[in-house]
Length: 166
Image (cartoon, rainbow, N blue to C red; front, top):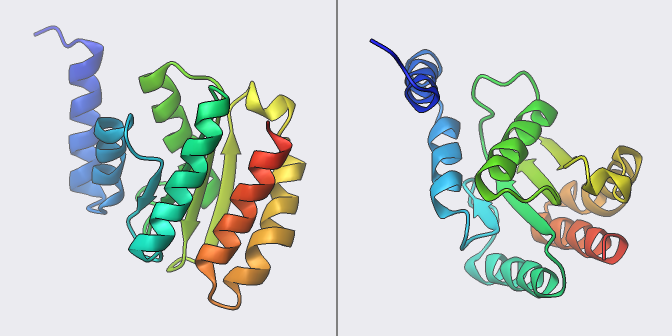
């Protein structure tokens, strides 16, 4: 029996789901299916509905001015991934392939794991460097996260990214 690449991918996801029964795999599939309409995937429910709406509207305003994409994902598990950075890169790559957009910044936050990472596509990295991402995380986001203000920290990071990456 000859398997095409989609059958192989589906089989791989099934095996990962059996070996690593984390809901992050289903999150990845949901991201793939809802890619066109949502920019904030709050799986950890750390944002109120008004906060999530505010973040969505901020990203939508940014998207109207530029073809660039900013995504925010919160999760309590990174599944079989080794660290948050690897998880963020994986999600960004899935989004890039599914949308054919190579100007993406993805912010992943885990309150449960106490981790955050920002991943940029190759084209985006020309402006939004890894060093800049680390500065945004350390100076704009983490100070608010340590106070329990996840929305404020996320909004601060989003505002800084939007300003730098116009």
